Length: 97
Length: 493
Image 1 (tube, each protein chain N blue to C red):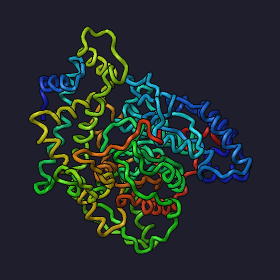
Image 2 (tube, one colour):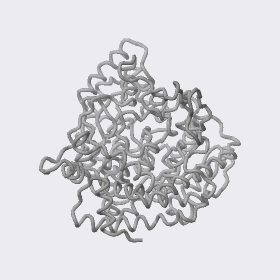
Image 3 (cartoon, one colour):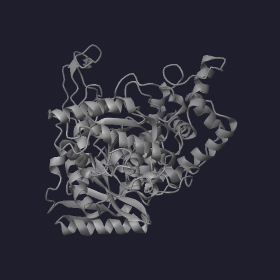
């Protein structure tokens, strides 16, 4: 797979990066080669899979709900709601400060 | 040089308790050894002598008086990776971008190790912003493997691993996004554990890929790893991804009977996929676990072949977003020669970041850009769920998964630096645990041609206790931690 130098120039503009013409040329070759290895993902059986954890809520949590049905890992902390807003723990000025 | 430096942290604390050793004298020995060995190893980016001696005096007073100790690791010297904040010290991430940045606050893990009475001896070298597998992308130069100074210590926590292996510190804190604790631990012949995602607060760790990063211990023994993990775990309101889960006493699980425990070995990371000495080490471990009454079976995890490509879409995508803040305005050194604001930002980033970081920002921006998002990023997120599902299905039957930490022992400095994909494949065995958010331990499992090799044990979410217990059993077979690496034997006899 190849990625043109104009593609790299478009991307570095998006990323606010200045690169020398030599680096653009080298990255064009290297990034193209790296992206070529991603082609294997086309064979993955993912048709029925969600891009996010299936244990996470598929619709935004609404007011007056406390969602506690998260699965493992980082999602075990319940999300608390105050009306239509998420409750964000106070950090500045709290006892923990 | 003192013969006490090769002790484990737990052994050292026994010496403190009996007052055969003073914390201050050990700290003095440590700094003497660091200064003698750094020209060879380059493990550290900065030393924290003032902090260390203050902590040492405090702990000596507590031991002398017989006061209640703040933790089972009170007085033990520890090194901290230079992407984790210590207030008042530089956090450089080994990047020109942050070479002058002084941390205004302690990371939560730093607060915890200081409160536990540990003695911080310095900040350790890493690949720039933790992006690499060798420390070769650090602005401070490459750290060296204490077992062979011509080879890399691994990365990105290469300085941390080298510091523990070379007995410059008894413990180290590293971070692991795709294997950055476990791969250097394997290369340097020490123990390293990446906890379950959410187990340890990431507050004060400079973010690389926020859905993958975890802080964890690098130590000489599994017991030391268990003790340090107990200290740094726990919910933190300052990290919304930290889990509000009970923290077990991991050290109490060590030595428990493993009879009847079911262990899976993925055939995709065996045979021709790994070097012969590592395959032999894996076979030896299987034989050992069977001799202990465990049930060891070969399984297939077909999605493992997707792990590296998936990781190298998701991690750069997250990195490109996380590193956007380093623009010479909010964070990072500013290029003052530019004529306009836009040019200043682009030039500050162009000059401040090294090649590997810029390459990953380019990849991450590319896969998130219009027209490519669905083909790359969205697909990779789905494959990540596939990998996670395959692991969770296996854990319906098995308690743990055993596999090599790396496909081969440490490689030579310069061998892979010009071939990015070859370097990325270094993480082939370690990336899957990050993708699925699982706890994973690397433990020394043998030596080949003078170089250590490691095996990896992956467990269910939040089941670090089983992982550590299995590692502790395996460790007894090799009893590695008192060995003096060949590269520094002239300094430490």
